[in-house]
Length: 289
Image (cartoon, rainbow, N blue to C red):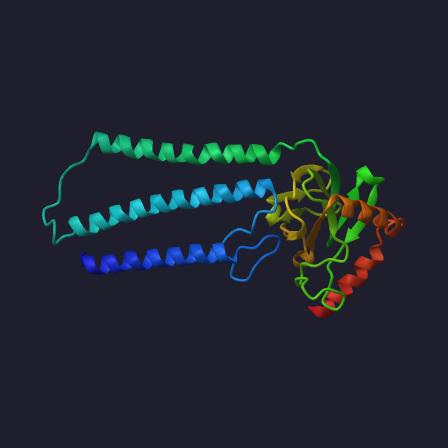
């Protein structure tokens, strides 16, 4: 097999341009709190955990790029120097001790370079610091129930807000909800997840959290929002017919605003969760779909 150096050079240049274009486009389109059309990168970081995840992701991208370029360069060298035309009499070498040691040690070093930062990240994710607020999240088919045990067991349902019930034009379709999960900024929030029927998964990408909600089992995770605003997520476990219509919306506010909302929410949801509101929203969603 033969290949001209010119064709190889043009191919490598094309791959380089494509890689740079994708990296620049991804960085330009990444957003905080919500997905963006044609986004090629992770969502922007809204918590220290997500900042660590993004840093680890960037580190891996560079590491993988170096490895890929090195392997590609070896392939090019083999194609150019050892094709039938350039090397009509192939070598009969069967062993090379130095080479065999190198290709054993180098992968071990690469694995260690990935393992140590990943263990550090896993430790950060699973070690929950002293919480300022605890929220219990119960997954149901197909909505979420939020409970604030630190605030007198305040509890309410959060369901899909359809196009005809949304009041703000900037709310994203299939991500907006009727009752948002509200938390204060710069506070450690401990999330306890459980399910009432089947397995669900509570996922908010900009916080770097994804925790399964399993019937009969209480799981824990945490986040600390570093900026105010709206953050969206979805159930990330195939949980049935309306799995794709089970959004998560977290509104991060100042501590004063949170206290005001808490007083209002205690009055608004004094009667407890209203399952009829879920049924009406499901009917509206079916009409929209």
